[in-house]
Image 1: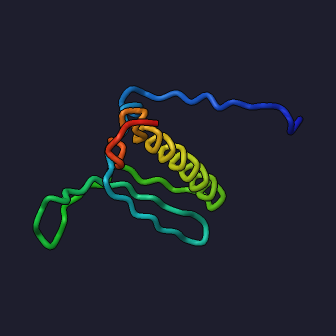
Image 2: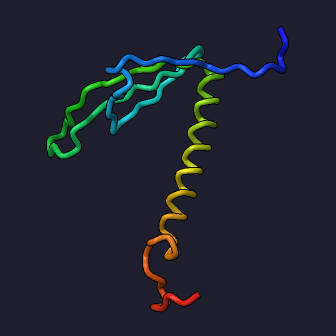
Image 3: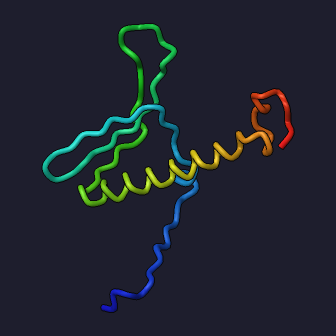
Length: 104
């Protein structure tokens, strides 16, 4: 097999999977063989000692894939931070110039 050829993954979603699920909590655990990420939706507004929640998805990953996922998340979060920083510049409609003037 030629290792230099470019390959593309073609993934199809059913409509209910494409809609995704909402999660505001995640737990990461591991064994010798795999990592497990459990995503849940919890109700943080409840004032009880026990916070109710429901698992919306659980994903098992190999250690190699976990490393690739961490790298991809760091890369995307860095791009997100850069984008948000640009949006907040005064010339792009962000906060007013702290010096009180808008002169360049």
